[in-house]
Every structure is written in structure tokens, then in C-alpha cells.
Length: 301
Image 1: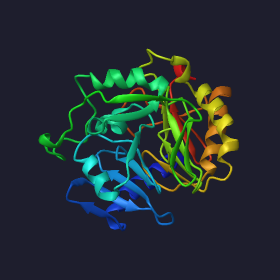
Image 2: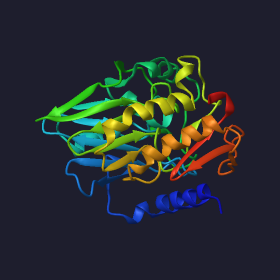
Image 3: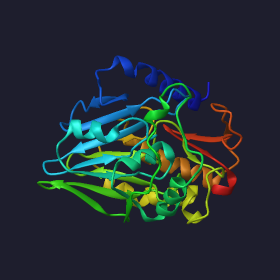
């Protein structure tokens, strides 16, 4: 069996096991499971089960001494704001790791959203879209869908820092490839990396199906490789990665494996395996190096 198939089996098993792990479900937003971090107080991992293969989305809440930071807003179903206000009474900043609808559709519950400047035009497009990304039909009530609306967007760049109080800083690391304005968030206090969809247990998607009217040069494997190379020195002390999908608390070894995977695609783009985990014609080529996997199309190398 190919390594990628073994890893996807592990991912599916992990998703199926989540309901058996210690967690809480709150009446204010019963669509999500809330997991308190096993090692770090004040860090919550919030899971929306999309009831679709590999599509469950994670949000993360870091509560500092003075402020809190919510990372992503998922599909926009249920009272996420009410849940966050149940978990903390601190003022909350909200950041999108990227504009895709399974990470940003809940933005309408908040007044202000931080997002990388390259993803702002994409987010504005998605907020006006007639069709939105939703979980499997029949798993939610129509009245619980949060309408898409334009919040105030605050543009971030690489190196932007959220200050949560008493020296607790979370740094933005621009990580393009999957999205032009994709970002990771580095918690310097606890040495945790919140990697969005850039570095995940499942394949990182860098595919031609994703629209590229803005900053197309940042929607490539090469841009991803260059950003990883720049970021690695900052991430030397990272203990765990918390991602936008699938397995949480993964090893920082994924960072170096991912860079090696990019290098192999750039050098040998035709040495891929056929990917058939989903029935999407744009997701047919996968490269797997170590624990890292990238699904790509040749026009995005």
C-alpha cells in the first residue's frame, strides 16, 4: 500500500475516534466539539465535523492574560461567537489562516477579521458569492447558517504580531501555495504552530481548480517551498503543529518533510503517484516524502 493511502486511513480513523476523546459540547453551539489542550492551559481546539471525507475543520482559541485569539471561523454554522464568549471573557481578535470557506464563512459573527493582504480580494469575492461551501446536507439546520457578510478586514503581512498580554506573542508567518495569502501562526510562548491548511496531516492542495485572479505567483509549489525555507529558522523550537484539518498535535518534522516534498515536485514533477481519495479530476497527482504530502497540478508548480 502506498504511504499516502496509509496516512489517509490513519486520518479517517482519527476523525472517527474524536467523539471518544475527552471533549465538551456546549448548548450555545452544539455543532462543534471543544477540546482543551492536554499540555497548555488556555488553548482550545474546536472541531466542526463536516460529515464528509476529510473535510472536518478545526478552529483554535488561544486565551492570553489580556486578550484572546481565535484562529479561523469554519463553515459559519452555529453560534461560534457565543461559544467563544462562553470560553473566555477576554476581548478576542479573529484571524483567518486563509480565505477558503471552511475557514472563513463564520466571519460574519465578528466585526473585524485579520487576514493576509494577498487574501483580502479573495475573501471579498467569497463574501459576495452566490454559492458557499457547506457541510454534508442534512447535518445542520438552515436557520443556523450564518449569512455571509463583509466584516472589517485588517491586512496583515509576514511578521505581524498579536500580543495577548504579559509578553505572550503570536507571530504571523506568510505561507503561500495553498492560498496566496495563506498564513501560519507561531505562538512564541508555548512554541506551538497553528499551520492552517499549509502544513497538515493530509495532503496540502496546490491545484489549478483554485481561482488565481490575484497574486498567482503565490499559488505555486515554488512559492510554498521558498516560504518554508524562510520560516524554518523561526520554527526550530516548535513542539507541535495544530492544523486546519485532520490529526492535531503533529510533529514539526512535517515542516522539513514538506520542504523536501516541494523540492522533489520542482525537480521531478512527473514522479507522482495517482491520488484517488476523492473524485475530483483536479486532484490526481500526489507526491509523498516522509510524512508530507502535496496534491498538485503541473500549472501550479
